[in-house]
Length: 215
Figure 1 (tube, one colour):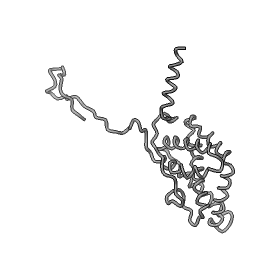
Figure 2 (tube, one colour):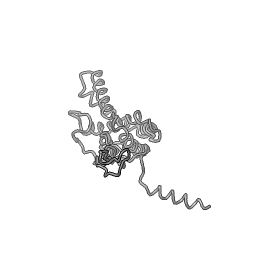
Figure 3 (cartoon, helix red, strand yellow):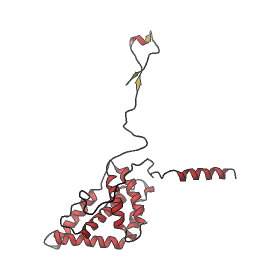
């Protein structure tokens, strides 16, 4: 019975602490402002796209990024990358199907003279989207941010996938920039001092106390 108050205190302390990354590091803060309609520099350009098609492209970027997460972030099972992504495909099935139909219509109209040319253009667009989320140096930051966004997307109400994309896509893009551990800043210059080994510091074979020199 004496152990119980201690357990309660430990649990209360844990609850009071901010959530830490599953990969056991202090992740950078990648959050950013929501995407604005027609914003330049976010994703693959789609000349002549209607507002509806631009919205679909924005949502498809998020789906592509989370797809890359499901494939690239399985090194840490606690991220639940693949499970979250599969759940998203189920929960938001209807909206994602509509988004894909809208994108297909754009490439039918702008992608070429026939069905095959349009499909090829759509495939190239999809490949560019996937590769734009591929990273090696920023993998930890990307996987942590993507897993958090995936959980938010998974539990978002059906029909609100686009809303999540507007609110969180910039965060996902920001996570592609290598940042590293935030609590212990590796690479910072650490002051080091060295002993003076000059002749004045020796008495025969015995070293005398001499001031250290900063390195």
